[in-house]
Length: 159
Image (cartoon, rainbow, N blue to C red; front, side, top):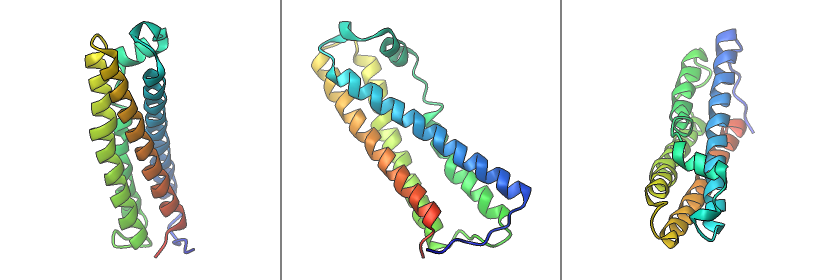
């Protein structure tokens, strides 16, 4: 394991904290989406939805989930503030960036599109809602796995 010797200036340290916090908040939103979709898929019909689930699907915002976009951006700022100790060409940076792009794609195509479909179909046949909820939960789990892999790569810094 190789840990890059980076500048520990207050700017770098602050950006690192912001970078990690953004990733954690985005991950928590993905976890919430998976949880709600999984629970929804297990319900017998729309009448069984709790007030919390009704509010979640009535007002679910994609803003927090889309914080995932800020992770590579804040990572770029980290690289720029590292005074050359971390480069975009470092293998672990490239691997992490690819993983984040995969996570963002799964988030958009699977989770957020799935939640929109669930919201649009809550009044329709319940079997359709259950099928979409199961796919949404599966895609959300995939996003979580990819984020976890990216975090491991960022900590271990292989290459």
